[in-house]
Length: 576
Ligand SMILES: Nc1ncnc2c1ncn2[C@@H]1O[C@H](COP(=O)(O)OP(=O)(O)OP(=O)(O)O)[C@@H](O)[C@H]1O
View 1 (cartoon, helix red, strand yellow):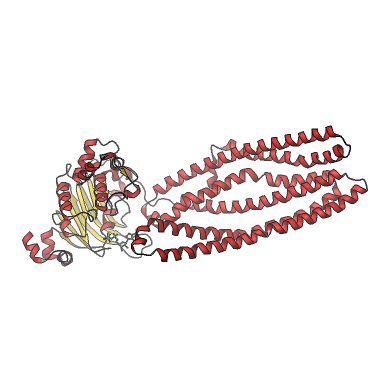
View 2: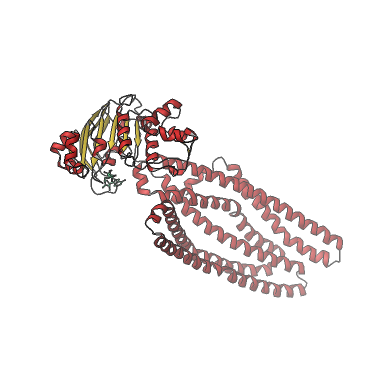
């Protein structure tokens, strides 16, 4: 957590001024009981109306100056805390962006979102509270005690007994509740995680009529959180009655002792009132201090969670080679891949090469390793054995940005972003001309439906592309990858939502593309890859066959099985 405080850099002035103004406010507050004592003793006691009015004006002035100091402190504290959290949020976001898929898989998106949002908010409110109260509360407690001694040493001895008793109650409750607050935070994390999962998967939940089951699940987690909060609340609820018993007991003793000493003419009535006021001030500040410590503990816990993400180094080291103007050849040189935390290899000894202008089909059952294989080319993951090479150089040697600019990838799940069609297409190439955008749309078989939209390229896209059909989304993601004219194009099962005619038209357009790109088509359908120059058949992470459609039909049982489960033999003879 301490390391996070560097993000306060640039707010040094606010960090000093906020507590300073709070101390000034406290100082004025400490004078109020003395002025009140003077009003009682001199003004009321001496029937001096003018004095009473003057002192009342002094009280108002003290109040106004105190308020001005408090508002100023609040302003500086809020400025420092919000500025701090904005920088922290930016740094954390940038760091998460720099992490590789491996780290992202390990952490999970849910917890990253909680850390980016509620954890940073908690740290922000912690910083704000610390700046305002950390010096003020102890200052008032000790200040009020010293003032009590200046009023009357014997009466002030009651403070010496009452304050430790108050501290035991306040801090005892704090120590008791602190671990419970941590558990409440954990339960809150679970409720947030469940809410997020349910909201993102709401369509699936409804499709499977699981609303009731999910509601029950949510109710259980929510009740668990509520029960914990109630329990902590009950313990915290003890704070007020117990502290008030002590304070009121001390006030009774104060009044009793004070009355005797007033009778004896040692102190004045006003002095007794001042002592009672100091006692109340101390109580209020001790309770504030305890709340502050609870808040600091929560903030430190949240800060540590943020720090732990910031400390994760990216396992992917960037290469330095920026010399990649064309992709002439992609080679998988005895490549193996074992995912972090997975016991077994997901890819074993993959060995093949692809030349410029070639189309490579990749086929295999679910979980056979097709996506894993193509993900190695843009370095979403790194091969754990062998090497993936472009133009004879290991992909690890290339600068990541250079490498990824060369590779256009259309992921299995078509993801679009809120904005216009044009905004989404420009992700592929910022400065693409309108002509280039339409060219990509034509190749991706998406031009027709974009033209049909009243706003054309300016048509709005909802978050995730929800206002488009699955096939339209897929075609737009293909167009987005094509805009940058990649030297290597990867279509990871990205034509699955297209009808056969559109799929065939897409493949024809891809073959006719300018620039001789190497095209990798991952598919479950043999019809999508039958015209590929080379088809790689995967079975349980291993190559079960490499060749053309005809060659594989003759000598690869795995390919035969896939193909004849989709087409009957008569149809195949007709095709041939
Ligand atoms: N991020 C990951 N972490 C750990 N294991 C993974 C990860 N991604 C995939 N795997 C494992 O690697 C194997 C191959 O998965 P992959 O997604 O490459 O298969 P696939 O052939 O593309 O499957 P599908 O056709 O269903 O998309 C599977 O056993 C899978 O569980």
